[in-house]
Length: 116
Length: 111
Image (cartoon, rainbow over all chains, first blue to last red):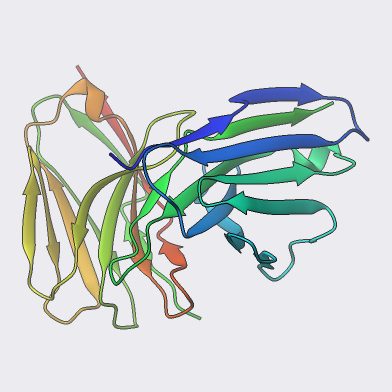
């Protein structure tokens, strides 16, 4: 149980275009979803926290107009990288949590973004 | 801020050997989590610890929640090639369910 999927798994785009990444909780309702980015050989860096039906909370230094997050339902959150540039190339990972006192996060398989 | 110090950063071992890695912090936490990340994949939860002193096993993996609540270790016994990957410790900070991650331990297993 507690499976999270992401789509697409990898995407290559031209500089200046926008890219949408979907994160779905397949067998549970995720009260909260998190978006991370990860550079090679580094740990996961939290970008934002999103709760269904409300605005996402962004970490310090993450541009909310650059990384648009929509959490339309308890099973779907999307991250749109707007006007992507080569420095946005990274591995983007989402996670969902059922909530409750243990608040275990279940991670998606990640999306590799390459901006040319 | 709250930080986790994970060590070692990398390990190169022979198949069959046991492995030990740990995570420490200057802060007290109520949860310790261990994740494994395969190349090009998201992290997968291996073991979750919720009580100081708790010792939990998952197959060849064993993890313990330190009695001081400031540390945790993960042991892997009789390593096999598919143990290769990056292992992260993590804990829940005090800000609404956000995870704090260690820097990761990259494990390489030589057949």
